[in-house]
Each structure stands twice: as C-alpha cells, then as structure tokens.
Length: 262
Image (cartoon, rainbow, N blue to C red; front, side, top):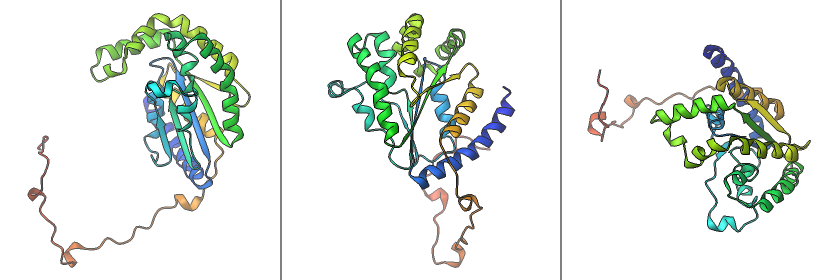
C-alpha cells in the first residue's frame, strides 16, 4: 500500500479514533485490547500509531516485564488484573496473559501442567471480564517467516533498532515450528464467541495498522457529542505590554546551547 495513501487513510481514521475516545470517556466504557504475535510482527508499531494523536489520560499502554519472585507465587492472571481498564479508559496490552499460551511453554518458562491450566482458565477469565461490561479485543498479528527474517536482519544491522533483539528473540528464531504448534493450540482452545481472536496480516506494516484501527472502530460502540468537536473559541490573551510585568530576556536564562545555528 503506497505511503501517501496510507497517510491519508490514517488521518481519516484518527478523526474517528478521537470520536471513539470522546465517547469512551463520556460514557465510562472499559476497553482492553490485546496485541499478540511473533517477534517483529509489528505489535509495538501498531500501538504507537494508535497512540500518536490520542490522550494518555484515556489510553494506557501496558507492557509488563518478566514476573518478579513474588508474582510467580500469585494466581497467574493476578498481575494483569491490576492493569485492566477502569471506566473511561482504553488499555493496550503489548503482549498479555497469553505469554503463557505460546512463549512460556516454548521457552521452558512454565510446566506443561501450568500451560494446560492456563488454556482452561483463560476463556473463563475473559468471559468474566466481558460479563462485567468490559469490551475485550484480541489481535494476533501474523508475519511470515520470510518477512520476520528480513525485519530481524534490519534490526541486527541498525544500531537504532538493536535494542529490539533480546536473547529470547534470537533463541525463538530456531523454534518457529514449536511456536506455530502452540499458537494453533491457543487458537483452538481460546478462540471463543465471547472473546474471539482477530488475525491480522502483518506482512505489510502500514496496511496492518490501518486494518487494526478499523477493526477497533468496528467493535467499540461509539457516538459522540458534536459540540465537543466544534472549533474552540479561545479567550483573549492578555498583553504583557499593558502590564507591570517585565519578562526576562531569553539569553539571561539557563538557555540550552543552539546546536543548529543558521
């Protein structure tokens, strides 16, 4: 998809996201959106695209680190419950409780019994969330082996992106088939009528981001107060010249050096 067309479509969708945001805040809706997929599938990029014009007071991004020693003793879902949305909030999970469905068993971070328990409990947990009035959306961003390899090579050679390659990412490159098998099992047991999986073709990043935003707009009911989007009448700015205040000169302040002089 051509970049110019993507930007045009994205601008249009951002207006709709603003309306959705206003409606969520006004109605006190609770929205949780899960982003899952293989490494380099585009989860972070999709989230950044969504957030670039939105209010951080309404939207939150949750990307939890590995569990602490204390969290390992808790009910598995407990650490995620604390980050679920309250009324008037939208939470974007950059990976979620589904770590236990694919990553943890593949990498040996959980036992087979823990994995099986998770697969039984996840649909029940999600039904409780939805029954409580939460809107839950689950995305799996698909990326082909060839496209993932290209993105990994790009990250490996670009110092600006090298931080994205963790030791787990490197090990996962050798476990593609294992990841696929666990992913398929996850789909089979946690794709429910209450909380279905939405699979996004992520090979084209720009198009994937547009499709994700459109899917969110299709699934979060929103209307909006038209008055909220009318141009704002700004109050007049007081004139410093007409006051007794004397503004200090910029050069008298602790001014950052101009690294880019004309």
